[in-house]
Length: 209
Image 1 (cartoon, one colour):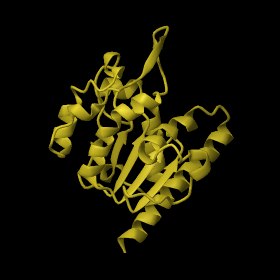
Image 2: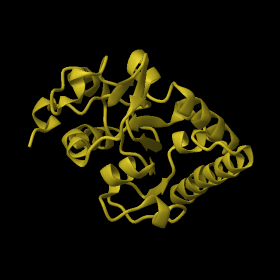
Image 3: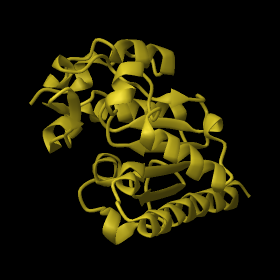
């Protein structure tokens, strides 16, 4: 099975990793993507947020979480009292997987093989950043970070034991909130998402003392 492992540099500098990821051919998703979208944030960020994959806007901009889901994430982080610029934000899969529908590019969920192929980049980011708190957003991120036994529906809001960070948790992906049609339901999910972020922030403060 193909993997990103052979494209990883020996350095764990985020700049070097990002440059190397630009030429990754560890799976076939690069063929239809505009560019690799690597993680972004401080080298020693205490909090690492992991999403699924870049969307249409991220694919074009080359930066994670700059589209509608990113704006919602920004709002939720602000409400939770978390400074996004102090966090490291990335995705489990670094290329946009999509299918055409008219003039639009519709998101497609990455397959398990594609998640696994891209995992060496995520592992390298974790080694470089060494976060104190790690939050996986959505099922794809939960699988990539914590393995198949961790489920958002079952484990959301619960502290997880992980060798990757002292504080570890899962929550929904912001795009799942955006897909809700009912306004009240959407606002309720956003409030729950903010509560999950607040829980991680509180646990992080506790871990520092």
